[in-house]
Length: 286
Image (cartoon, rainbow, N blue to C red; front, side, top):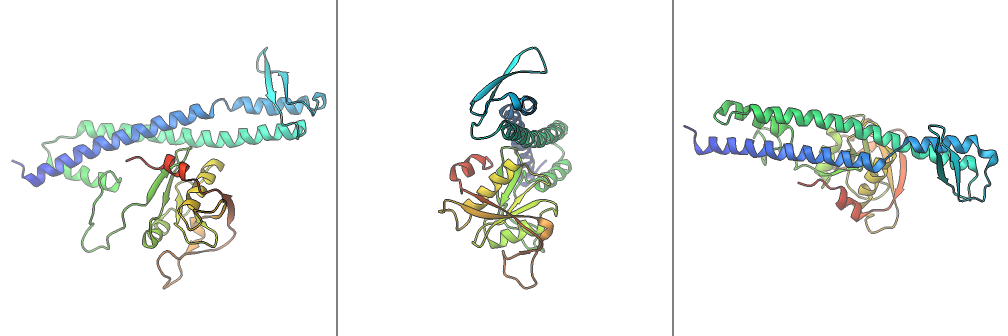
C-alpha cells in the first residue's frame, strides 16, 4: 500500500516522462522544419561553379543568366548582383553554400541525437512499472539530472543552485543559455564545457551567454549575439558590439564579485541588433 507521498512521486515521474517525450518530439519536428527551410544546398555550389566556368562569357550588367546544368540536360537560372563581377557572384554562392552546409550538418547531427534520445525516453516510459516505488525513485533522479523535474531545493548540505537560465534554440536548434542575474551568470559560465562558446556585450553590463556547441554556424553565432545584446544595457541601442570567446579563455579572479570574469587571448566581436522579436521566437517553449 503506497502512502500519499509515494503516490505523488509516481505521478510526478509519470507526468515528467510525458512532458520530456513531448518536448523531444517538438525538437525533432523543429529540426525537420529547419532542414526543409535550408533546401537544396547543392544547387548553390552548382551555380557558383557555373559562374566561374562561364565567367568570360557573362555580361556584368546582367541581373540573371541561364546556363546549362551539368548534372542533367536542363538549364538553370542564376540571379546576379550587377554591382559584382561574375567571379564575385560565384564567391557569394560558394559562401552561402558553405554556410548552409555547416548549418545543415549541425541540424542533421542534432536530429540524429534527438531521435536516439527520444527512443531512450520511450523505452524508459514503456518499461516503467507504476507499482515499483524503487524504480520510480531511480527514474525520478534521472529526470532531475536531465532537467525534466525541477527541484526547488537540493540537498541541504549544498548551496542551492539558481533556477535554470533563460533557454533559447537557434535556427540550427543549438541551445543557447542566458544568465538572469550575477550569481547565475557565474554558475552558467563556470560550469560550461571549456570548448563551448561564450558571449558578453562589449563595455556594457549584461547577461553571460553560453552557446552549447563546439562549432556553431555563422547563423547561430549571429542569433546568440543578438540575444546577448538584447539581454544587456544595450537593449535600446540600434547596434551593439558583442565579444565572442571560448569558455576555456575565461577565468574568475580570486575575490571578484559575482558575475565578473576575465578572458585571455583574442576575442572576436560581432556587431548586432538586439532583436526582441527573434528572442521571443527562439525562446524555449515550456
